[in-house]
Each structure stands twice: as structure tokens, then as C-alpha cells.
Image (cartoon, rainbow, N blue to C red; front, side, top):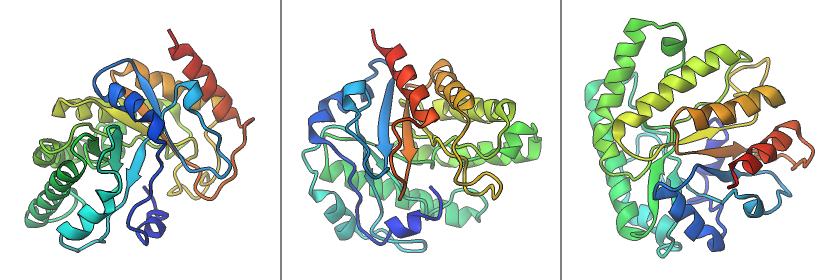
Length: 271
């Protein structure tokens, strides 16, 4: 997701799982009402399931950039949850599909497909998808309507279709790079629409902080009004749900404005 993933890759797997909520997560993956998954990493974070926010499992690769898929190690990272029935996102970001030669793309597509095959073989009752792999990320091409960038983006997404055949859900990432709601809307709308091309459930990744690639805003929370807009926007843009990630090495704050808005949004989803 960003450089902290280098830390996560030092361990074979990070489980953020509450077994009692597997049925809830599995039901969400079957096309039931809009769901908000809890992938938060805050220290001292309470159990949020009572608010209708089920946990989701995150799994990290046992290998890094340039490595071939190690079938044995990949299976080993998943063996401990072989009976799990919920939703899992694979955080494998070392094999880019964009900006690399065609033969490299083909190799990376094969690797992603193989890992997904192993995942389904090892945890056959779970629902799998890759964080941020499909569709490929494109910000400026969408915001500026840059035809050259958009054509390359579409081709990147077309090449990813083979991966989509091996996953159950799509996890597009629409993190916030700038304090510009209008630009974010264009970006998010395009990413969600493109995610729909794969004909799988779409769960959008959101992060209540600005992306660390922006040195002026990194480490700061998105303003409450903007954050609530993002939650509502994803719901209105034909996504099937949201995965809220963030909080690595941070303390939980029950009175954080973004969380207050999230609780209000969750309450609005109740029948």
C-alpha cells in the first residue's frame, strides 16, 4: 500500500481476523447489502463488528520483487486458515502491470494467477482478491482526461483480465493524494467504473489519511466532510462495499472526526 509494506514483507502473513465474523464477511461477498470491512491497524482499536463492520483478513507474500512464486511457502502462509469462509485480500504489490515491458507484464500476470490458484486450493471456502492490482492505478490520466495515459491504463487493465479469472472480488484502491474533492471524484468514479469490467464484486479501499506520497499532507487525516463524502460517493457509485485500511503504528482515537463520520455512515446502512 505504501512503504510500510516493506515492513510487512518481513513476515509471511499478517492476519487481521476475528473468526466469529467469517459468516458475515462471506455473506457480504455473495451480493448482500453494502458492507464496510474493517482492515484498520490502530493500536487499541476496539471490536467494531457490533457496528456492522466485519473484519477482513490481509495476507502478505512470502517473497519479494523479482522472485518467482514459491508454491510451498505460499501454501504455508495460508495453511493456518484453511477452513476460513470469509473474505481475504492479498497484498502483493511487487509485480507491477503498468510501465514495464510486455514480457514482464506476462510474467507478472502468470505469477498473480498462480498465487490465486494456490490460495483457492489451500483455503477453498474463502473469497479472494488482490489489493490495488485490478484495475491498475491511474490518477492524472483520469483527472486531466489525458487520452494517451488513459489508453495505456485501459491496456493495462485489459492485460489484467487473466488475473480476474482467478479471483472472486476486485479491490480497487482510491486513496486520497490531494485535498481536492472534485479531482478525487473523477479519479474514484473512473477507477470504480473500470473495476466493473471484470464482472466481480467491487470493494473499494479507502484510507482516512492522505497518501504519504504528498509530503505536505502525509500523516494528516482527511477532513471529516471530505471523508464522509468519500464513503457516500463509493456507495452511490455502484461499489459493493468499502474496505477501510490505515492506522499502522498509530493509537486509536474514538473521537477522531473521520471515525465519528464513519459511525454515522454505518448507522445509515442499518435497515
